[in-house]
Structures are given as structure tokens and as C-alpha cells.
Amino acid sequence: MAEFQATKRSSSSQAIMPETVRTRAEFRRDVEFAGGGEADGAVLGPWKGEFDDVMKRARQEARRAGMTRSDVASAIAAVRSP
Image (cartoon, one colour):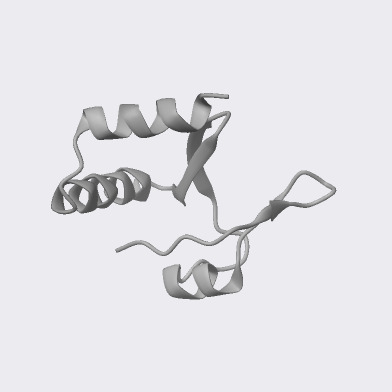
């Protein structure tokens, strides 16, 4: 299962990736990322065609956990509600 940790944005608008995440994912200096997201979250993955593989693995893990599209939609709606 994926590991998630809190992070922040630097004063120069760079995302700061925790060292444990960088080490586990074997991200090296100057690696390029593909990413996307909404106002409440984002997903990053290695570039060069590997992003599709990252998303495929995320979908497989969600299925394995028993999540459905409606579960995801409900979770998003819950965190967007005031």
C-alpha cells in the first residue's frame, strides 16, 4: 500500500517531498514528474511514461481495498463540504 505523509510548499512554491517517500520511491535529484489534481489534493508520479503505471497501481490498490467510484465521490464531497 502507498505511504502518505504530510508535506508543505516552500517559499519558492516548490513541493517538499518527505525524505522517507523519496527514498522508498527511489526518486533521485532532477527527476521529472507528471502530476494532476484539484484544489484539495494532487497526485505526482515519475514522468517518461511511468505515470500511467503509477496510476494503474493506485487503481489496483483501491480495488483491492474494496473502494468504488461512488466511495471516492462521497469522500471528495465530504471533505469539500463546509
